[in-house]
Amino acid sequence: ENIWVLFQGSVYLDWKRGTIMKTFMLGWEFPPFISGGLGTACYGLTKAMDRLGIQITFVLPKTSDISFGSDVKMLSAEGHIKTEEVSEFKNVSFCEIASHLRPYVACGTYEACQKEKKSSHIRLWHSGRTEQLENYGWYMYEQIIHYAAKAAEIASVEDFDVIHAHDWMTYLAGIAVAEVSNKPLLVHVHSTEFDRSGEHINQMIYGIEWQGMDTAIKVIAVSNYTRNIIIHRYGIQSEKVEVVYNGVEHNSGVPLHTLPGKTEKIVLFLGRIT
Image (cartoon, rainbow, N blue to C red; front, side, top):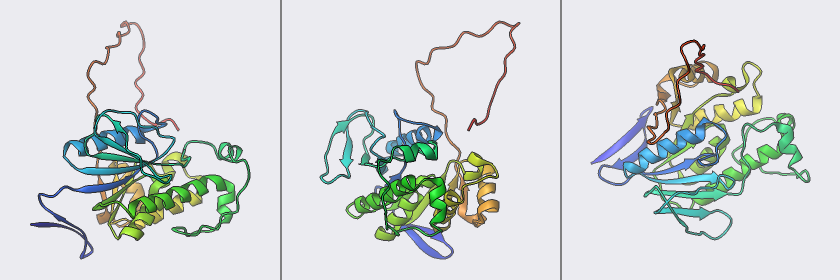
């Protein structure tokens, strides 16, 4: 029996029941090296999918060093494929790409890391006005393009059913992989440019976010709040956007903190500091 995923009357995913689902996942951070909640969310999602027997090829920047336990295959995108046994996952392959993707680093920091300005003529998977790139940091955009090109190169020799891209830095890679593989793209929106910048958004990032959401067959939002932003600020069709809440990791052996005395005032903060 085949399971079909439909969008606007077209078949985007034809998966045979009883066979192993294979996912090509794109992210920019993973424990133990993380700078935000996305890495933690990716870890929990990957672990849950691994337990279900779903095979995952996870493409990451090389700076996100992975060090776990047995049965995880480490792949290098720098030429030859190397295999290294690490732990925890049984159905996950991590592919490393030499790319510096850091969404929370200031633009000036990216430029300072650049020893010389390169004149790149890459136009693949890109639409938009180039004058905006100078304001944000051309080096950073080059890294995103490099990541996309390498991800497409890896995808050309991998076998998978669906592409899963996490947040804006991986959306161009997701589009590139979809083009070379003709596989359906899902984009996972953990935050939007409006969450990070308020009303003073970076138009280049906004454009990449829109392009990824528009190209994807489904958009995964982490909350109804995020879903509403996607629909009303990006103009994405409501039937295309699904909410999948982040789960809670129940860690064992976490020491209990001593509760403060009753005379002390306690402030509980639940929110985001950007």
